[in-house]
Picture 1 (cartoon, rainbow, N blue to C red):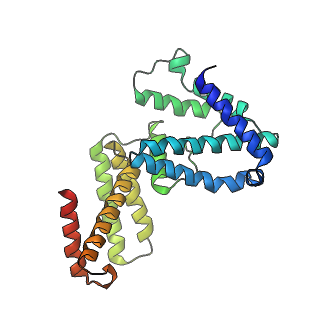
Picture 2 (cartoon, rainbow, N blue to C red):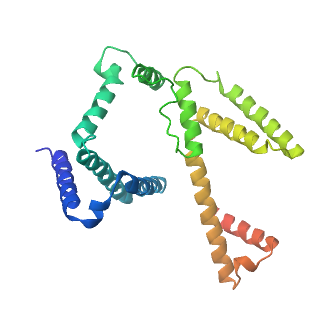
Picture 3 (tube, rainbow, N blue to C red):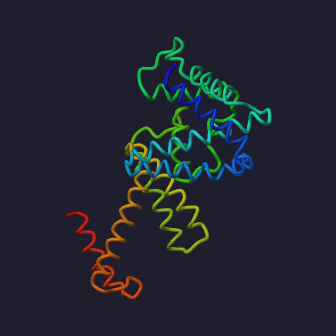
Amino acid sequence: MDPRLAAFARLLQIMDELRAQCPWDQKQTFETLRNLTIEETYEMADAITDKDYKSLEGELGDLFLHLVFYSKLGDEQGLFNVESVLNKICDKLIFRHPHIYGDVEAKDEATVKANWEKLKLQEGKKSVLEGVPKSLPALVKATRIQEKVKGVGFEFENTDKVWNKVQEELAEFKEEVDAQSGAMEAEFGDLLFSLVNYARFLHISPENALAQTNQKFISRFQLMETMLAQDGLLVQEQHLNTLEMYWERAKKAKKD
């Protein structure tokens, strides 16, 4: 047997045994697993961000377990099973790749993506945005919205026009800030949305960029705390001027 199939069969067997014999596994439902799955997904994302591929291997295994668990619950309730789940994704992939399994030509990634969105509409979806999950983090969701409407041609013609839109939104946000109006939050949202779009045009992942900046800030701040402690100082007792001095020292040390 193909060792990949053997490994998957082993996981299915263990899942059956756990569901039949383990009190914790027996109590789980779709609802109780949901938050655990989200947590596991973020742990996988952290491993990717950190380029910790040994941990990534383990996190992928955790997610495989969750997918098998959901399929087991569906089977018990007569909703679906692992066979139907896998066949459904296989059928979808074949249908949405007519340039591989049919006679459609697609010479580049942009054509593939455009065909993908058109085929989704043929599946009965009423909107190209119908498949964007409601609970996606806002930054990721903005990117997915823009990618999807691009697939049907709703897109700025070039990067310069996107940058002009950023400038326009920044000016509108500044007007609301100066007026201290109740529209500040909405205008800030418009500005963020336009920045996400500009990043996309530059082939920058806004989510990854912000994640890297968050990690850089955490690392630098923790180094600053260490430097303060080495000098017998507590961060919470220091004046801002002192903190800024140590911040610059930490910044320089990180660059070195």
